[in-house]
Amino acid sequence: MAAHNDGAGHGRIGVLGATALVAGSMIGSGVYLLPATLGAVGSISILGWLAATAAALAIGGLFAFLGPAAPEARSLAGYVQAGLGRLFGVQTTVVYWSLCWFGNVAIALAVAGYAGFLAPALAGEGPRLAVTLAAIWVSVFASWIGPRTVARIEGWTLALGLLPVVLAASLGWLWFSSETFLASWNPRDLSVPAAIRDSGLNAFWAFLGLESAAAVAAVVRNPARNVPRATLFGVLAAAAIYISASAALMGLLPAAELARSDAPFADAARLMLGVGGAALIALFAFVRTSGCLVGWTLVAAETSRGAADEGAFLRVFRTRPGEKASAVNLLAVGVLMSLVAVMTVSPTLGEQFGVLINVAVLLSLYAYILAGLSLIRLSGSFPPGKRAAAVATAAVAIACSAGLIATGKPIELAYSLVPILAGAALYLVIRRR
Image 1 (tube, rainbow, N blue to C red):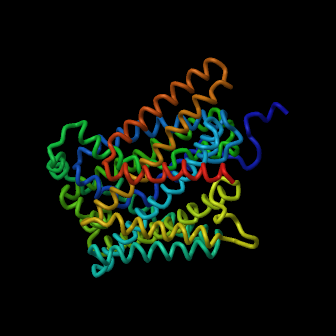
Image 2 (image 1 turned 45 degrees about the vertical axis):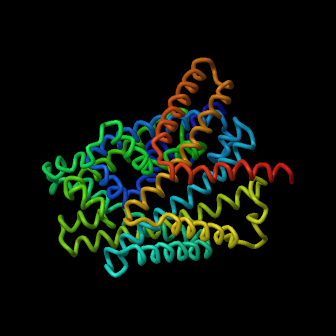
Image 3 (image 1 turned 120 degrees about the vertical axis):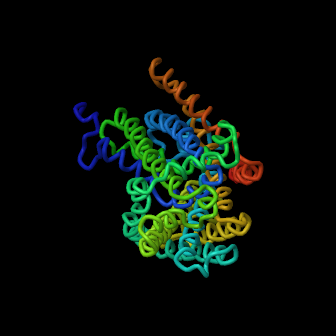
């Protein structure tokens, strides 16, 4: 019946629920080390946050159009393949799989950083690497037990994990020092464009997951109206919390101290709440990052398994009869994450974290460019007015993504190029089968 075209069926979510989904997908463990990475730039990195927010809003608009343009698609790779064909669909699968395990190593590094705060013997380059590797393999084992276990771990750790960020974004302002903030404004004497260049890519890491509302458009009431609004509100909510928390920390800790910190939220909590409060915040961050790592390890493994089942990945990764979790996929993810952890070891935790998140962001931005090109191809099915809006949105999203990619450092661009080329090579292998 036409009366149900608004999608108001039982169990569907409205704009508030979809907004919570978008914001919740972004507000997580990724921010726990970000202030340390941005501290190297100074509090002028707030401008990078604003640039990243603008880019996130543009890319979010892209996915609001992609949903109705390719309603059968169920993933980022599906959106790309619908408009650009199987080559780019396979390539996007490999790119997304790769950004999962680069991002997972960054999360494992956050686990190690807060573990080092709780147990100083675990701080330092060698112990930090050991804890990072241990966190990776514990998450692999937990994911192998099964998805139900992963879901329970995520649920138990979610509320605890939000506390440090919310505390810094709110109560942190009671201890905020404008003198500290201004003294840390631009320690490297960068121009404004250079400061945005050096911080915008880092900051965009916090917005990965912005496509969540579009991905679940089928369960959103009146998706044509509510998906764009939920994406806009979700990105703005996440940006407000992240920018507030980062600015508060930059007014609590001098830039040089923040850049050296292995646990920035715990170090800030020490000033606000004393040693006991700092230890509690560090424990919460440790628990949440550990739980998040388990969840994303399973996502990475399921990405390759699902693609292999559809004939878009190597056959060795296919589901085997009776499997509840794929040992082959999890083992591959664990080995690759371990290699990345070793290859990116840096003198400070913040430096290594910056490389890892930038590679993950560069890979996501490449996929977003492909999604934008796909939308331009698919927009022919829209009425003229909507088609013009879709093409304009895609063009802005592509330009924002390309602009952020241009800020990547040579080593980061080199790392990100490997999965892109591997995806093209995999397509050739699949086509010959």
